[in-house]
Image (tube, rainbow, N blue to C red; front, side, top):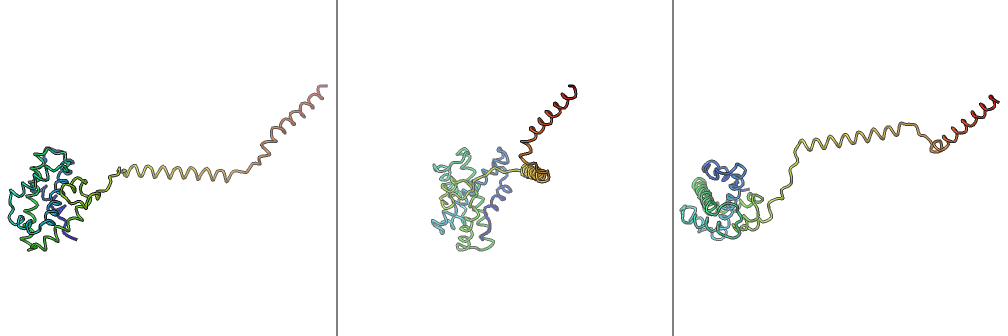
Length: 217
C-alpha cells in the first residue's frame, strides 16, 4: 500500500497554510480543504496517466504558470460544483496544488523515487482517495473510477439514545416475563364455573327466601 498522501497533504495544508479559509467555520474549512485536496491530487494522477514524463518535468520545475493554468481549468469546468466563489476557488486550488507539487518534489529528492517510484506513489493514492469526496470532484479531475465511492451518510445514533432504547427493550421483556409467570402460577379456573356461579347464587337466594317465608307464616 502506497504512503497516504491524502492525509499527509491535508495536515500540511493546516500547518503551512493556516490562513486559507480563515473566514469560514472549522467545519467549512475542513470540508473545503478536503474537497480541494482531493480535487488537485486526483488531477495530478490524471495528468500522470496522460503523460507521466511531462508531469515529472513539471514536478521538477515547479512552474507557477503551469500551476495557474491547471487551477483555472479545474475552476472553470462546468463539472465543478463547489459552492466557493470562482475567484477564491481558483486561488485556493493554486495554493494547494503548489504545496502538493513542492512536497512531491521534496519526496523525490529525499527518496530518489524517479519517474518509476513516483508512478507507484501517485497511482497508489487512488485507494486512499476513494470515498473522500463527492462525485463532482471525480468528474472534474477526470478520476472517474471513483464516482460512487463515497458512502451514503446515515444519521448517527448517539450512545445515550442507544442505551435508552436497550433499557426500554429490557424493561418490556421483564414486564412480559412477569405477566407470563403470573398467569402460569395462578390457579386455573374452569370456564363452566364462571357460567354456573350466578345460577347457584340465585338458587341459594331463592332457598333462603322460602325458608324465611315459612318462618313468618
